View (tube, helix red, strand yellow):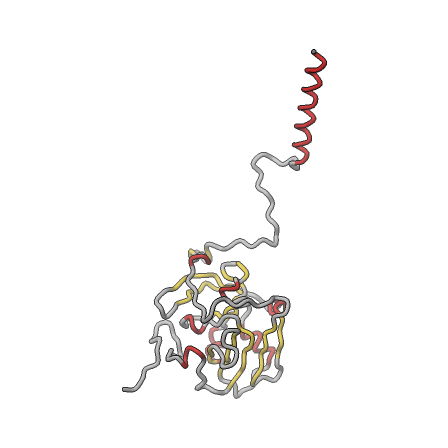
Length: 232
């Protein structure tokens, strides 16, 4: 009877050792290692609390568009000396910087976020913009033919406008415009083009995109009138 009792005790000790070895011999309460590839959403930037992505309001003309990272191409053409066809990975090779910026919608809502990406100026410099070019027209998946909206080149240059590939340190979600969203500083949200596939440099300063044709102010300053004034 005594030998049988010792045998059971030995089995329990062996089982405990096996469990300990399988657990990796970690210290009690030691946090699990997080993969270096994992993205963690930023909650604060430059001392300012950020609006969580889940709480950010968002508009789209006809639902979320899905662009394939592996086949995506951004075309930069028009009045340029060196037309570009840039893949997603090539765009990520440009120097990236982060801004704290509010997106203000004409509907009256806004949110604060950290936007990270390259300066559009860097891309336009590689394209070799011709002197007669005055505006950049943004063509998107949901408005491919007529163009979604435009920004003046002087404004782009003076404000070092970003193309945001990350939002609050998270790779831009599909519903926010993957692969990037134009961060149109101090402009209403309809200038923040999403799902952009082409940027055309043009001399047509009277050009109107989708929203401007609908009566929205082409200037779009977020402290100014959202609609164009009409003569009585």
